[in-house]
Image (cartoon, rainbow, N blue to C red; front, top):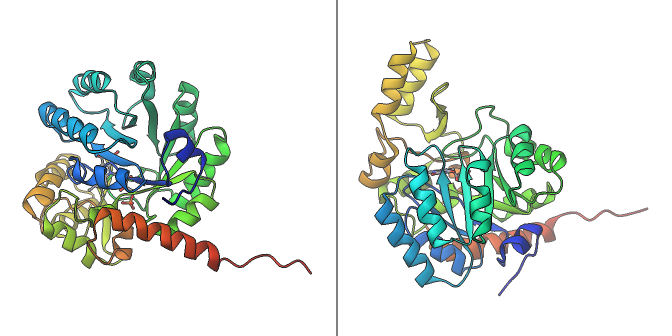
Length: 321
Ligand SMILES: Cc1cc2nc3c(=O)[nH]c(=O)nc-3n(C[C@H](O)[C@H](O)[C@H](O)COP(=O)(O)O)c2cc1C
């Protein structure tokens, strides 16, 4: 088994610095995270949209399906986040990746049961606060990302370096636009200890989204995403009818009520479960333009490692005169 040791792989006990991003619906299941963890990366169950009994069943499947490290992503804004936290404390996942909230709410309780706690941040201030609170590692998300890019829209290349410099003692996982082994090499060169891949794993055999969704990701070019929802929680989606209407309203200065109504008239669920790629929220990153095939997740991990090796070998070495 290939290993690429970094501070993140050492912390989490994984072979490869490859994290499959928690993605609502797409990884709200065991198949994708199991495939990634069993291939040596970190598979992440996205608890975001899951009902409590479905999450409990999925956690059982994770325990039965692997003896490797895996994680649960919990967006803390969920109305019933405390119930989910109680379930997770009972089940003790190896790793928790919390997003959209502050770490103090959960950190000590998860550390007490032996769960490693990673926190998703979008900038240096947020990162410094999470580090001071005692998180084990940070997931740093840049503007290229699918789903929820940072409101400041600072690119991954820039925000990762800023956070690594500002918080040098906490391992960092870089997220947003990474997509392949060249991206992984770039992120490790910037000082991250691993990279997180969302859009790349959306186009995997095991992702639990509709085949139309996967086909739309594969068909998209690098210019085919839009960011919509200013002031409402910006999301990056593939261009479609919904994104076009939102942009028109935003560009014409429409009042917030109308923008909010239109924003909530479309859902990720419609796109992910029912294949409504024309009018749903088809969340995906700019790197959709770098993804050209739906592949088994284990093969994606192998490809990233092969591309990473090739990228390192292709780098020019300094020649001292
Ligand atoms: C379809 C989709 C759903 C997502 N759902 C979540 C989520 O539930 N929780 C979360 O923290 N991030 C979520 N994200 C963001 C990812 O975790 C990750 O940061 C992003 O996909 C990385 O960028 P990339 O897509 O360019 O690889 C989602 C992204 C996508 C594409």
